[in-house]
Amino acid sequence: MSTPLPGFESFGTPETEPTPAGSGEARGEQAGSTPTSARREIAPGAVHVPGWLSLAQQQALVVACRNWARGPVPIRHTKLPNGGVMSVQTVCLGWHWQPYAYTRTADDVNGAQVAELPYWLVELGRQAVAAAYQDRHPATAAARPPHTHTRDTCTPKTYTPISYTPDTALINFYDDQAKMGMHQDKDERSDAPVVSLSIGDRCVFRFGNTETRTKPYTDVELASGDLFVFGGPSRFAYHGVPKVRPGTGSPATGLTGGRLNITLRMTGLKG
Image 1 (spheres, helix red, strand yellow):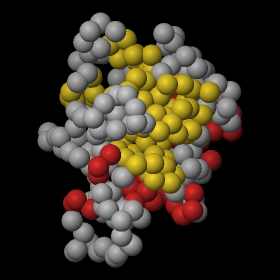
Image 2: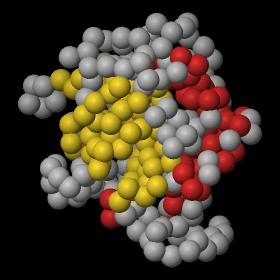
Image 3: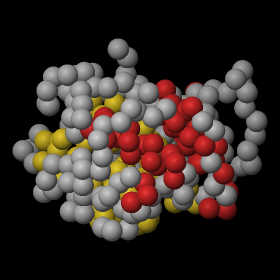
């Protein structure tokens, strides 16, 4: 199992949390410039957009993640009900996740309330859904041409930038020994898409089917700056990370080693 915060706590002193919504580049205008041809549908409703995050966005997210990792609920190896411990390290925003439920307070860590999910990260999630589905429902994104939505005609089930409102983020840090077994994201009471952002070392992301942890699955190479969104028919597909490729990330991101994965979700919970 990896040791606490290897290569993650040691790349700088605490900084003021950035507000990526404050500039054109950080708002996702650079991210949204990824060519449409680069967008690839791995399965119905599951879309990979390589290089979606700009370098400036990656740098800002690394700074923010470093600050969140220090608390109020610090990053930790999550303990499983069977006594096992996850090799990845996790810190949560908005809602705290522990196997297998969401709470406002981290009762399995220190009892503190988790940090709020900043609005600029909500906006980034909305832009990610728009980039993946091109303003179409994930179930039909590949089946029909796009059509125009307005604030009056958009419905929640389209999950456009207007209606997609994530209320939690799970931030996972992988060192070169960490893995994630095949699992479903099914603790939410919402079938809204999951937005996944990658920074740092490349990894093998294994995306499977909704019935079993075994084949058929597709191995996707996720690099720093990549976006992966899964919803619609693929919302509850099994997925995991069998391997991180150490030394493949750029220090220019501010991450000297390992991989950060930020997933945005709608829990469907109140309170």
